[in-house]
Amino acid sequence: MEIIEKKGFIVVKDLKNFDLEETFECGQCFRWKRTESDEYIGVVENKVVKIFKENDEFIFEGCTYDEFTNFWIDYLDLNTDYGVIIDRLVKKDDVMKRACSFAEGIRILKQPLFETLISFIISANNSIPNIKRVIERLSIAYGKEIIFDNKKYFSFPTVEKLASANEFEIRKMKAGFRSPYIIKTSKLFLEEEFTVEKLKLMGYRDAKNFIMKCAGVGSKVADCTLLFSGAFTNAFPVDVWIKRIIQTYYLDKDKSLKEISEFADNKFKDLAGYAQQYLFYYARSNM
DNA sequence: CTGCAGGCCGGCG
DNA sequence: CGCCGGCCTGCA
Image 1 (cartoon, rainbow, N blue to C red):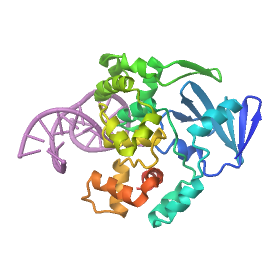
Image 2 (image 1 turned 30 degrees about the horizontal axis):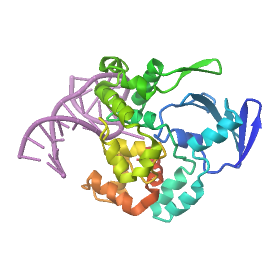
Image 3 (image 1 turned 135 degrees about the vertical axis):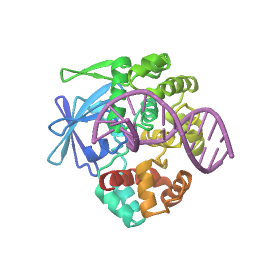
Image 4 (image 1 turned 45 degrees about the horizontal axis):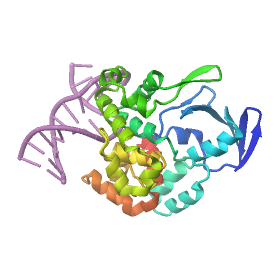
């Protein structure tokens, strides 16, 4: 990867295994928007950035060299060699081979922990367009305004803001029955002072049980949170799509979610999270 | 009108 | 423990 600083933007060359659509539309995040000209604009923490591809170069608009090297590289997981991960996964079997070659440009983002947790609480029994709308409404109502390219954007609310909100207000954001979960979880998050570092020290099992104490957080939401916040790459969220593809290609129909989870753990081990993303993207596009 | 979307909770056997 | 009905909301 070669990074070149220009006036007001960054040019990145020689970056393999990075595709904007595959990364931002594989279901791990909800706040990246594609423009008419296939650029992606995202809000993360208090930053807004626009990314697009020009020939073989990636252009990052609205960030400095320091922001790129100190923040976006980590967030986008650009220092990890996904070629090595894919090489190891394609050796597993033909299904993985097809899944990996179908989306070789996925990067598993390291998103802010609180935003990830709340976003996936909202995702429960919900549709992706709806999830995005609720998160957007929450950000407009409780986040901070950021001006980028003469347009208004809003950061995801802080834990303090959501912890002090009441259920009636949150229901106005159309979060439905998840509204009390959002508030309760925010309060617990504040009390326990959750951080990715703290969760990492606990180890995967304990960390998962720990965040499952949050209201609205079951096994699937917990694994999504641990995987997409960069805490544990071995977390393997089992949703309907993963269930579908595992039951079609690997296990019998009658296997429970727990059995699917154990199967993935044994088969993919430390790479389970990556495997999940390739399988998920593949299943959603082809099943 | 019914059914369902990236599940979770609570009650019951 | 495992199973199952109900659930906000929006859209087919």
